[in-house]
Image (cartoon, helix red, strand yellow):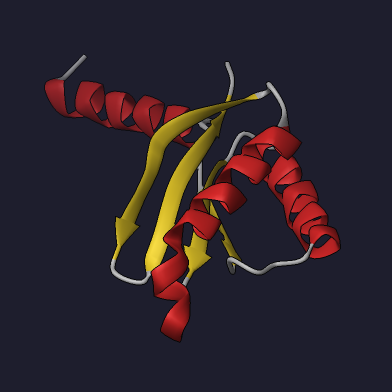
Length: 110
């Protein structure tokens, strides 16, 4: 068997192996500090679906205007999201502030 044919077969095997892999995606859910309970439950239901599919979920709390003075409300919102999601979730990135956004990344528990 010549070397060219061998390299061709290796590339074919690598291509088929790559086709059968499932990559994870990062889905984002945006909230505000004053998001009401029912809207929050709807967003949490979406997050549960994303996590059940094996995707990571980025939860972002957006602050506008004077809301920046009440960042503890945003942290409380993220704590409430974690409480509603339950135990099937692990925190991949803890909450951190980047400008007007407070975000954390969640991943499904393995």
